[in-house]
Image 1 (cartoon, helix red, strand yellow):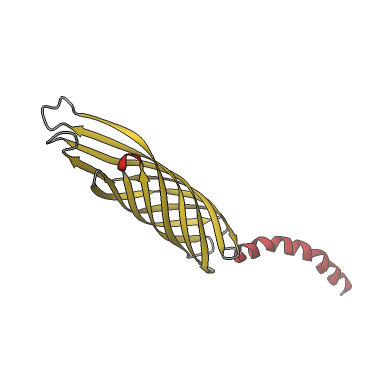
Image 2: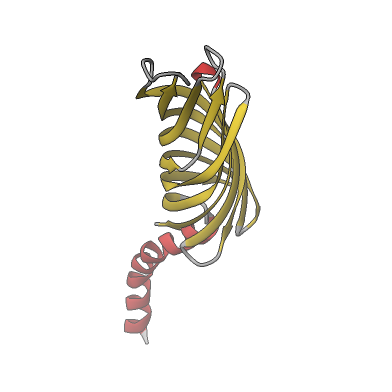
Length: 196
C-alpha cells in the first residue's frame, strides 16, 4: 500500500501537467489559433450605384480569452463576384464598370463570451481591395479602356460565433468597408472554422 501511495504522489505532478491543457481549453474555449472558410452576400457601391454578388474566402486568426473577454487578431483574403456600372460619368452615353476582385484584410476583434459556447464580437481594421474597371465612351470606341487599381480602406463589423464541437464553430457576421474614391462594401456572411 505504501508503494502505491508513493507512486501515486510521484505521478500526480505528471498527471496535472498533462491534463492542464484540457482544463485550460475548457476554461477558455475561445483561446488559440483558428482557420475559417467564409461565404456570403457582397454589395459594392460606387458613384451612387450598387451591385450585388457573392464574397468567398478564408480567415486565419488567433484569440486570447481573459475571463469573458476575448481579444483577437486576424488576416483575411477574399474574392467577389460583385461589379457595378455607372452611366454618364464624364460624358453623355458613356459607361464605367467597376468589378470587385481580391480583398486583403488585417485587423483586430474584441468580444464577450455570453455563454461558454457563444461569442459576440466587434471588429475593425485595414483593408486593401483590387477593383478592375472598364470604360466605354459610348461613341466610336476611341476612348475605351480597361485596367485595375488597388484601393485602401477601413473595415468595421460585428458578429456571433457559436461552438458546435470541441474544436469547430460556425459564425455569422456583418461588415462595412469604406475605400478611397467613393467605393464601399456592405457584406453579410457565414463561416465555418476550426480552432487548434
